[in-house]
Amino acid sequence: MTTRRDFITKAALGGAAVTIGGSAMAMPARSYRNIIGANDRLHIGIAGLGRRWGGYIEPILKKEANVKLQYLCDVMPSQREKALANFSEKAGYKPELINDMNKILDDKKIDVFINSTPDHWHTPGSIMAMKADKHVYVEKPCSHNMWENELIVEAAKKYDKVVQMGNQQRSSTLSQEIIKEIHNGVIGKPYKAVAFYTNSRGEVPHQKKATPPGGLDWDLFQGPAPRREYTDNTWDYNWHWYGWDYGTAEMGNNATHELDIARWALGVEYPLHADVWAEKLQFVDDGWEMYDTMQATFKFPEGKIIEWDGKSRNGYDTYGAGRGTIIYGSEGSVFVDRGGYRLYDRVGKIVKDSSSATAEAGTALGGGGGLTTAHMMNFFDAVRGKTELTAPIDDATVSMAMVHYANLAYRTGKGFDIDDKTGKIYDRDAMKLWSREYENGWKPQI
Image (tube, rainbow, N blue to C red; front, side, top):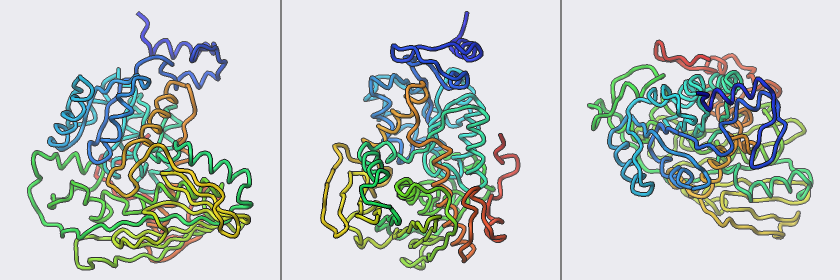
């Protein structure tokens, strides 16, 4: 009996045409290996059931998505049980609850792995999934450091997998519309973008050694990170601010999104130079261990520049919105965020105002809603060979590099030059942090 995967492989080797959406399309043999089947149901497993989980329910349940959720995986029992109760009530069936993602990866009928774990698991877990013959939707940031940033792209190419990062604004039709207009000259020559994020996060408790709560599998939570004793309140979001073992600070947590839009709008790749001013300025004696305020500057060829203004714990509304990107051109400017855009002429008069029919929380934890649904539907269609990804991993990692450059500049206390063709850094101190220390036996390999 010929299995679906056998059929796909034989078709790829034969180089024949396949039928997609009712029409025959001649495609390169390589493309067949990315196709599950235009009308086949996708079987998926999700690892990481924290704040992003809620955004996945709508796309999974859409009839046209034609997917079945087989596994809900999390190292915290309460997260698994809460997710199951929420999902099964809406879906009418119950996925299997598991503690270890390896069960998803070992199941040959699983087509798609959704990686919503903490940052330090994103590249290692995604590579494990690709090696297990799964396509991957990985939340931002797709990498914990620059070495992983390169490695995840290499893995996607080696294993020929569809890999999309969760920078969901790339799937906004309004963002796509205005970026296309910018590229077509609606504001003349774009030369500068200011990306920003403003929040009023509160005081963070100091870490104290404690027993892992409620059945938490602390060893699996740490995964690739060096082992240490559990400290109170680490597992539930505050790992973002407790050093560099697990998180990537606010740059990886939120700047990922806006910097990606800025780079997209200006049509640039790697910068020539990165520099930052960053400090911890609020609740100076609390447990938050890195900057909570950052201004970063990235210089590009042709005199183009991207600036980042990040305020995690000072809620002053500098730009009239909690997050977004302002693009300046020789003949006008644009403000764009997840809700739409406003186009201005050179003297600052509004020319066009657009607002989205779907909304996604800008500063609320997790977000979810319309843009996540659109982004995941794009991913599902790409896995079936029906469309191209809006945020393919080889492009997403270029934006991610800016996140890492800013963190490296902060950690070394100085700016540095960058090879705008390769993304490599011309600074020995920064290059020492190109990778990280891994727990023995956990370093990702492709």
